[in-house]
Image (cartoon, rainbow, N blue to C red):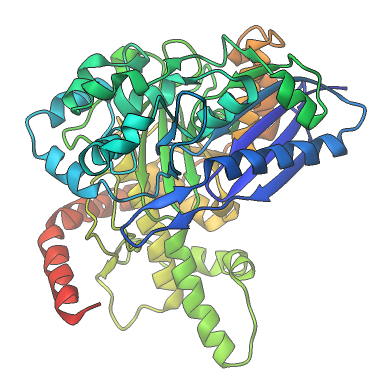
Length: 517
C-alpha cells in the first residue's frame, strides 16, 4: 500500500499519521512534547529535543507500517514563535513558543504608534507578543548577541523541514502574519521596516508553497529512519490552517466557516478572493493565506472556550465528591446535555473571559475577566451552565462579525463538538447550520492533503476534499429560527456590556495588586 505521512508537531504532542492515497487513516504514533515556562514570562523549547522526538515518532509509525511504501511526507506544527539557527544549522539557544509573553510591553507600546495601523493593513493581522516580529524586536533590544550569532529564523515546522531536507524555508501563511503582505503571500520589506527589523531582514528564509514544491528527504535522515532516500517532503502551512483544511473550511460551492472549540476558540471564515478581505477597525485577528491560489482564511480566536465549561463542571465535581460520588468531566459533559437544553434560553448574560491571560479576540485586553449579568435567586446550576454555553456562542459570533460576518455553514470540530446542547445553542446564536467534522487528526490530514495535491495524486484541492473531507462530515444541523430571534437582541446587550467593562477590569487589576493576588 502506498501511504502519505502527515507530521503535526503541536505544543503538547508530536503526532505522525499515516494515510492511504484516498484519505483513510491507517496508523497513528505520538509522543508528548516538552517546553519550559520561565519566571520572566518566557516559554521555551529545545530545538534538538523536538527534532529527536519527531524522529522517534517517525520510527514508531514505520514499525507499525512494515511492508507499506511511503510516497510522501508533509509537516506542519504549532504557529508563531521564534526558532533560530546559525550558519552551520545548529540551534542558537532555545525556541520561543507562541505562549511566550516577554514582548507584551513592546506590543502594547507599538500599538499606540503611528506605524501600527499601516502594519495591520499590510499583514491583515493584529500584533501579538507571541508573533515572530515582536519576539525578534525584544531580542534586538535586550540580547542583540543572539541575533548576531543567528543566520536563519524559523517556526517550529520550518525547523523540522530543515532537518528532513536541509532546506531553509518557511510557508506563505506564517511569513504573512509574522512580517508579510497578505496580498503577495510573502515577506514584506515595508512591514519589516515598520517593525524596526531591517537589519535582521537576512534572517528570514525563502517562502515555498507545499502544494506546489517539495524537496527530497536527505540521505542521512533516510538512514536514521529506515526510509528510502529522496522521498518527497512537503512543507505545510501553519497547523491551524491545516486543521481547518482537514475539517472542511475549503469546500467549493459552500460559504463556509470553521470553528474549533478546544481550550481556546478558533473561528475562521473562508474567503475566495483578496477583494473580499474585510479588515476591522480594532486591528485584531488574523488574515491567513490558504493553500489554494488566491484564497484566504480570516480568523479571530478567543482565549477561553472549553476552559469555561471545565470550570463549571469542576464546581459540580467538587460538590459530588463531597457527597462521596466520583465523576469526571467527560462523563458530566455529555450527561448534562439534556438538562442544559431544558433550561430556559436567554435568561441572562455570561462573558466567557475566564482565562487568566484575559482576551485576544475580537479585542485584546489582558485584564478581561468572566462575569454573569442578570442572575437572580430563581436561577439554578443548569441555568448557569446554559448561560455559559450561550456566552461561548456569543463570543463566537463576536469573533465572526469582526472577521467579516457569519458564514452560511460552519464546520465544527474540537472535543466540545460532541455536545448536542452546544451545537444547538451556538447554531441558533450564529443563525447558521452546522456540520461536525469527525476526522480525528484534522491537522495531519490537512497537511497530507497538501502533499496529495503537490504530488499530483489529485489534480486540485477541490478533488482531494471530496475523498478526504466529505466522508467525515456529519449531516447538516439547521438552527432554531425562533431562538435565533431571541438571541439577536441579547447579543447586542452582550457586545454593549463587554464594551463597558474595561475600566472595571483595570480597577480590579489594581485592587488585586494591592492585595497581592
